[in-house]
Image 1 (spheres, rainbow, N blue to C red):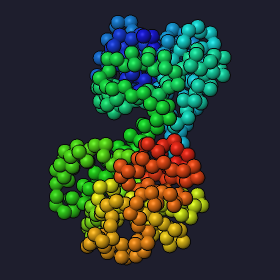
Image 2: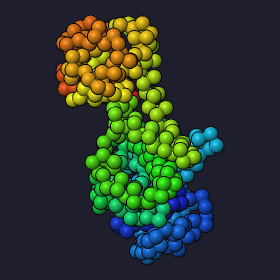
Image 3: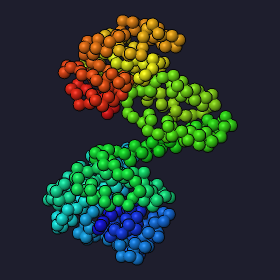
Image 4: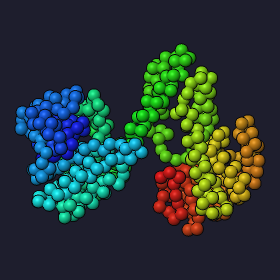
Length: 433
């Protein structure tokens, strides 16, 4: 394929070398004549393992050249990668001036070009940028999006020091576009890349890099806080984290990574507080660990505020234990919600097939005695007794019975766990989706 790359910095230079190694004809574009001259000599613009050999070989085969003339680049290629910088301002917003100007240049060049052209956003941008770039190109070119050109969001997952290997062996390839034919072309472009291709909505493609890198930053800080605690205790922190990473069932896995309600139960709250107390006793500052519980509490408060906003007075709660399949109400976040609503004068009825007053013992019994002494007046034995009475239903765990609900047209449903069978029904809303 004939491909132009706008921006010959880190992402653009690596992409040029890797695509040329796969036999594609590459034209680099940059405002820096120094970078253009380096590429035209078969030399990299960055220091990165393996990139010098790829550029040298691609240049020797006549597959690589560079220019400052964007008209030339667009005219002689069918695909343009946007790899220009999107630096962060002091307030956290992005400076999009470079990428928007590049979009304007491509649109201007497309006025004079026949044939379909694909523009690929590799730069890290906020959701909504794909549409904005499409608007600019459409306006400047006089051409129609998804007919004469298409814009695809295709975030990169490169680490400095291993960028070439990361390009050729990424964890996955993410593509987001409104144009099916553009997606098919890119699937062919990435056919030799050792990774699954995920076709997603444009907003997802634009958002994922921010989520990835923020989580990576969180991992670094979390490991460092663990390391500080371990050091003061004389424990080998690297050995602790090696064992931590061996657990692929819970620790390094999709488990827990689904937006929903607050965590609860006996283990997570207790052990988090224990680790925070241990750090405190060692005179260590652990701001990430200290922020977890307050963040968790915001989800509980969010449910209460949402109920207040909707205005219903009869509230049906489906699920009392902290998760389905258990009667464990220790630190169950929905108990906090019920306690708050009852205190504010709301009528509450509850259904949970695993919770019965006659079977409550130990900690479960003390939780109810101290926090929900009126549970006997709230708990219903039949699901229908709650669903037929309530103006608003709160689904608090994933009991299979809740998948069969058929809310009436006047009922609101606040789903805290994502029951997919209910999505799209009138009055339904997810807590954070």
